[in-house]
Every structure is written in structure tokens, then in C-alpha cells.
Length: 558
Image 1 (cartoon, rainbow, N blue to C red):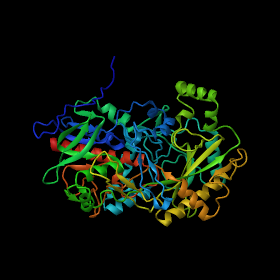
Image 2: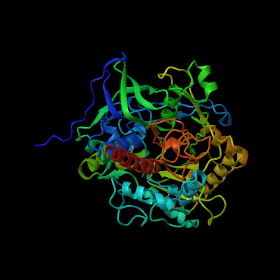
Image 3: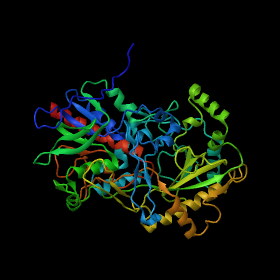
Image 4: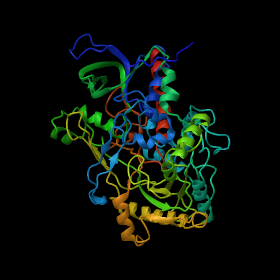
């Protein structure tokens, strides 16, 4: 009987001595959402040797695969970088916890599993900004569809035969159904699903869950590809810096594994897939970035590229929490052990029930400019409420609506704190630093209050707002609450911006400007944040880049 693919976790590497170093053809840095796709695509070229390097472990933690477990993983430093931002001036000096995946699967292995493409205007805007028509909404459809295996009754624009299974909550909780009904009561259009954010409306989210289990690019792309002898996976290995030749060609990667410094030569190039934090960090550690900043840390400048680390964008969310009369929330489940046992059995036997809940069951896209305008606010609804990290649920029957602005104007930056790769970089998203972001967030919170005040939430369930509470009515009070209690929605992008101008980091083919054989493929290349969750867009980027790089290397071989 076959035992399945062997995960090749190591290859023979020698300490950096300058002679007889083990080499490969392409090194992919980061086995995250994009890196798993890129490595799998490149390994389709039979004679191309590919090594995928990941700082974290294999995805064996059981909570990775049980959807409800994502909330435990957000603070688990075994699979998570557990970053913090610098103090945010517009948030009263608060530091914001920033989880990012440090495990095979990356943030795709610890996220809330929500699948939202964004809006057509997002990608048409990319095409206009970059001057490349390959980024229009019409042009990116094929790459999205190749990722999507959506239910037959989902939005007709989604793919049905792709690599990532998408599903709706099974079953939808009574509280989530009440939220949708209340949204319809105030005039929101019921949506078949919320996978495309081009119109206002309320409905269910599609999630990357198959038969009650998380699906990720690690499972859909990487693990099947590990059958191939030309692909190797190296886990628990930190990329220290890039090896660059005199012509700024990427010829290898310096690594550290088990406390030993190693050099892996790359004959054909290096692809960075570290995400919006780690990709700019590795470029700067390698001497590619703002020369003045690098010099201040004693790093020699190989390429003055000031845009590296700039243009940081993220969604900032603020929660409205309501108490309801019926004991039907996950808060209630955790107060009744017999319910937990029942849910566990339901999950084991049927792969259904509350253990299949990810980052949200239901939600809405809202417009603060009127119901017929393009949405600028997203809502994630959950049949639970908590005091903080993990599973610290309130003692009352609580529900939560997390409200975020879809297209923030605030722009931040990633900087190095040290030339030491073990020192976390400085992360400064500058949340709410633009007054326009404050205005949209306030209006979004008010719209969600209208939903909570509408039947059946207000009638059958007697919903009563607990946080921020009835004393936060005016602009000043509500803004103070948002500044004091909001947090990241885990969607950082933009720090290696794609474009045609001199301020861009990569060109529209993912190549780092003024270098050779060096590419960046992850959310860091996004010019402007899409209108929704960012997992889908990262998968789309990886599909497009993976096919282009694969075909390019294949032509070279022939």
C-alpha cells in the first residue's frame, strides 16, 4: 500500500567555505500561500531543480486543519512570527499584535479561511497604475478560476474546477442567519455569497474549507508536487541574505539551519515569497533598499531602491459586540461541557458544526456614500464574542461584527531595526493616520449599529450592544473607541510594490528592478490593497507568476 508522498525536509548543505558548495537551479524563499504554488509550478519543468526554504516547521499542528483552531494559532509562536507594530500615534500610542504564518502553508495555514477576490475596480486600477493590461479584472479571471473549486450555487463568476475547495458554513448558525435577515431588513441586498465585493449586500462568506477541514496551498499544490524528485523542501531554515553577483544577479541564498550558516547556490535564480514583512526585510538585509537607512545599520548598499518597505497597507478593524437573549453562541458552548462534547462528535462523525467555523460565517459589504455606491466597508460576523486573544469568551451570549475600511488611505512602512536577521523589523502601518480613514470607519460602525437594531436581532434575539455601548454615540466618543480597541484584520500588502515607475520595487513580471534572476511573488507586490480579504489575491498572483516563470524556464531548457 502506498504511504503517500515523502516530504523531503532536508538536502545536503555545507557551511559557507567558498568551494564545492551544494547548488540547485531555483531557490524559493517562504513556503507560504504563494511559495507553495510557485515551487509546485516550477517543479513541473522536469530538469529544473527547485528548493523551497521555510523558516517554520511542517504543518503538523492539528489546530491548523480544524477551522475553529485558527484563533488559537494567532498567538502560537511555534507556527507564527508573532510580530508587533511600533506604537501607533493615531491609536493613542498602542502597539498592535501582528500574526504572520511561520509554518509550511504560511499565513494560509493560520488565517480565517475567508475567500474574497475583491472588486473589478481594484484590478482595473492596477492595470491603469502599472500600464499593463494583463492586470485588468478581465485578464486576471483565468488565474482566479484556476484556484477556485466553488459550489455550483456560488457566484457564477467563480471557478468550479480549481485547486482550492470553497464552501459555505455547514450549517449556518441561527445568529448568523439573524444577522443576514437584519441586514435585509434595513435594505441590504441579499447576496448569493460575498466572494466579490463589487456591490453592497449581506450574506454568507465562502471559506477555504473542504469536508470540514482547512484547505491551503500547502495541501493543494505543494504536497502533491513533493512526489517529484526535482523538488525539495527545507523546513526550520532561516534565509539570512541573498548572494548577488557584480551585475546584481541573484546567484544563491545564505541560510541558517540548526545553528549553522549555509550557502545554497542558485544557478537560475531566486524567488522571494516571504510576504509583506519578510520579503522587504530580506531584500534590505541583502543590501537592496534605501541606502541611507541601510548605511545607518552598517549594511552595505548593493542597490539603492528606496521604495523597498514603503507603501505598507492593511485593513484596520473595530468590533461591535452585542449581547443576545438566546444561549446559541459559542460563548454558551464553552460554558456547557456537554455541548462541546456534542460538537466534537458532530465534527468527527460528520465534519459539521461549530468546529468548522473560520474567521466569519456571515458578513456584509457596505457603502458610506449611499446604497448604490461602491462598497468601502466590510463586515465579518461571528456567533461569539471574546475579551482578547485565544478562546477567552465573554460569560454572556455574545455576537461580534468586525468593521473595517476596505480601501485605506493611510500608508506605512517596514524598516530594519538591525542587521541581525533574528531581530524583527520595525512595522509601522500608520493606522488611521489619514482623517478620511477615520470618517469611513465611523460611518461603517454606525451602519452596523443599524443592523444590530433591526429585526430579528432586535426582536427575537433582543440584541443589546455591549461594546462600545450606548455611551459612545458622538463622533469623538466613537472614534476614541475605534482608536483604543481596533486591530489588524491581517491583510498587509504593498511593501514591494509592482509598477512601471522609478518608485516601484518590482516590474509587472515580478522581477526586482535593476536586478537579474530575482523575483518577488507575494502580497508585498500589490500596488493598492484589494477590497476584501487578501488570501485569494495572493493565490491569484502566485498562479500567474508560477505559470509565467515555469513557461520561461521551460523555454530556456528547450
